Amino acid sequence: MLDELDALHKNHTWSLVPRPTHGNIVGSKWVFKTKLKEDGCLDKYKARLVARGYTQVAGLDYDETFSPVVKPTTIRLIMSLAVSSGWPLKQLDVRNAFLHGDLKETVYMEQPPGFRDPHKPTHVCHLHKSLYGLKQAPRAWFDKLSTYLFHMGFVCSRADPSMFVYKTAAHLIILLIYVDDVLITGTSSAIISKCIQRLGTTFALKDLGNLHYFLGLEVNMFDGGLFLSQTKYTCDLLQRANMLEATPISTPLSVKVTPSFTDDDPVDATTYRQLVGALQYLTFTRPDIQFAVNRVCQFFQKPTMLHLKMVKRILRYLKGTMLYGLRFLAQSTRTVNGCSDADWAGCPLTRRSTSGYCVFFGANYISWSSKKQTTVSRSSAEAEYRAMASTYVDFLSSA
Image (cartoon, rainbow, N blue to C red; front, side, top):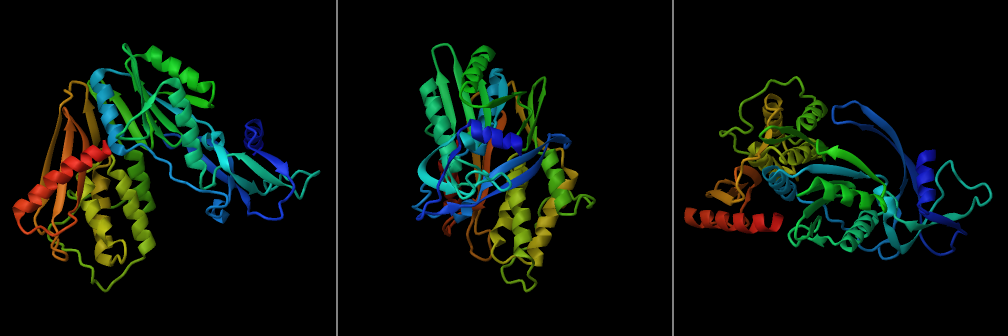
């Protein structure tokens, strides 16, 4: 807790002012977290001062809140490009990232619990920097970082606002941002090191070395390329669902079961949504469960026992395939190829077709999707055409 307060004071996060007679005062609290390494062992104990952002008032002490994060397709594309080009892949972590953001709004916060100034006990904190918990904190941090990257000569990608590119006649650097996690690659290790050193002069960076664990993704290098998996995440999900000892099954979805919206045996919707939401993130490296996960996502509003059994079948399939993942080969071309398919009137409830596509960057699998079409197709040819069109549009918008 003292280390956290020292970091806040060094960053000039706030100044104590008399309590205003008019205005909203945001509360504060301490949040304690145990941080683990990628192998599950203890890394450190973390204490963080958090503002009670849910008490903020729109238009008074916050305005815009959205902060872009890098798209999954972009991450896979850049990994494939780096592996096939022989570029180094580095990862960075920004310490106390949100504390670097500058606030444009006037925000007042109660003094930290247990650390109230004895000489000014009734004063409040006038925040100058963003703080964890504030609604605008992610956006303020991204604005600060992106502004500095523009100053360094980086250009923001038009396809993904969280990808920044620095290009000269001899060198190329690509930087991906996901909140406070940064992935960086480029044509030269020396130019990447210089970029990291320059960023370190303004932000408190922690150089984590070669890419090995990023956003819950396990990255393993081998002689011919890179293997991307989520084994630990899958194991944690099975343990949370009490299915770590479940019997494995060979397929994630049964072809004989037709889900219905009218089943009379409802289940807890919160638990169902938590499990399916976790499965959605697992599709980052598991295209083999994309169709099954999309199917169970269609029953968020009123899930029933039948739908829960479908989720448990996916979990049983994962039990036997925890080591599955994506392999990016170094010997790959840079040709983009895609294929699509459609299930004409596959949904017996809405008669809408299901579109599916996959996109390859050379030999590497970088993008896929499975979802219902927005309208009812009157023929199989129309369903296939819509699938092909959505393949083109969706890939361009996500990569």
